Image 1 (cartoon, rainbow over the protein chains, first blue to last red):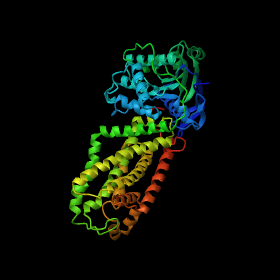
Image 2: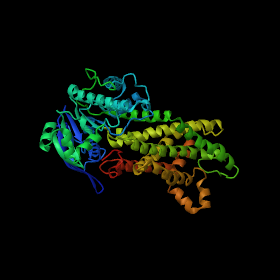
Image 3: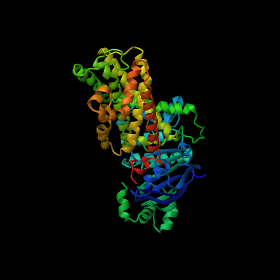
Image 4: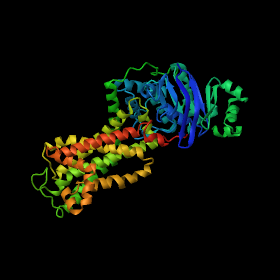
Length: 250
Length: 291
């Protein structure tokens, strides 16, 4: 059974079409990169997968559970890190995490144990009583990742999780997520426009202006696009000059 | 992760089979939402102070000044002449609930703009339950503010029968639910925080002044039959009267019916508005991200 199965998804904002007949699936315990420039439709797709928007055309299934018809069952299996920061800045790290645990029906000692374990996982132990406002951008992201894992999801969605972070923080977050795939068997959909976050063994899905233009292993995407590297393949598929790719990579 | 070196074993994250949500899980969720709202309120001391100062200014200054100008005849639930301060106290309780209900609406718009709202909306619990939890959280905070006001008013000499302080609790709760539900419905219609000023002009002020909060309805009827009809069509009128009667251990059945009915109506509309398949949220690009 696929961790995520997106079938024939289309979505419009009024007359503007954001996604057009997008279909792909990702297997459990794999790292899939959703590549696309700004405006390609990545965030719309995330909003549909997380049921913030209703699916009007096509279907989305998370471990077999239809997001529209059985949103509760589907959402229990997915952890989400949104592009925009979503921590409550007035609350402490622990209060933010406890709130999220409660929103998934996890409370009391179990919640405290999970929070302690996950703060260690993301190298943030000892910071649980700090106000979220006092954290750096990279630290907030780490807390958001811990939060997304609190209810033990089988699929993790991260929307541009490294945007605005320094190189070291980006590398650390990416390493943490890849490690989760290996050690815990969590499926990951990693949306980004930063081509240097793609590794050779990854599964890649490329969106351009709401259209799916590539879907497969990095080597397959490179070969079918007739490019010499994934960077060149992305530039061709996105119809931009290679220099443009260099510009969007920090 | 500032240090890219990773711990060898990632602890505590094991995909597992999920048990079906039971009552215990719903209560955990409710408790979490209420606790978060209380913590936010405690962290925002200015909000608490302003919520207390507003009605106290009306009580200490406005009521003192108007005591000699406005006469209040003996009307139910009062059995004798009462001071003007006593008359407007239920209205001021309603004012706290009204402002607090709109404040919760404001915080929902803020949460939506800042992205915090998404953490609530992607919870696996039913959307209606999450919204009701959010309302209960808002009402809990509102009622705490009302009782803080009543304590100060008591020291100022404005006293209801002792049992009234207990009897008024259900009336405060129901009125608070109605106003929070209205606030939630409004929050679904407001796209940007800047538009919230319109709420002040079109909801709070007309709602408050076109009601018996400050003057008895019979006086309004004498002054303007049209305004009287507007007051009768205003749900806040009935919230104030429900609270007023409850202070004296009485139930104003008409008010109870209208407030309960409006609560259900506003809540149903808010739930529809926040439903991704039917509501206004789908039609607005309000999740704050890129396409």
